[in-house]
Amino acid sequence: MATTVYQATGRRKESMASVRLTTGGGKMLVNGKPMRQYLAKDSLMMHVEKPLQVTDQLGKLDVICSARGGGLSGQAGAIMLGIARALARMNEEFRKPLKKAGLLTRDPRMVERKKYGQIKARKRFQYSKR
Image (cartoon, rainbow, N blue to C red):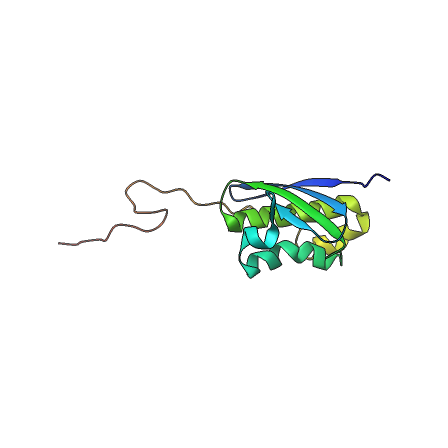
């Protein structure tokens, strides 16, 4: 019996994640490591598991990801979007609750560029009148 694999890509900031969902016992891997070990923070773990909780699939599917670029927070956001998109592909009925929870929308926010004559994007050098 061949298991069906559902694949999707998620992006956030400078990060990109390729996600594969298969039926299984709830194994979650990122770049070959267990997801809890890779993401380290519970808040990031909760963020990643949200699409699975919304669709009541937590522990029923195996999630295998490959994430690259950016930092841990951006990678967690990319993985979350990838999982949500793969779930929507898997079952059309999951689309409505995922959409309502705002999990199918890519976060468009990016880092603002640094401007010349300033310390950072908005922080300026101290003004001296005299």
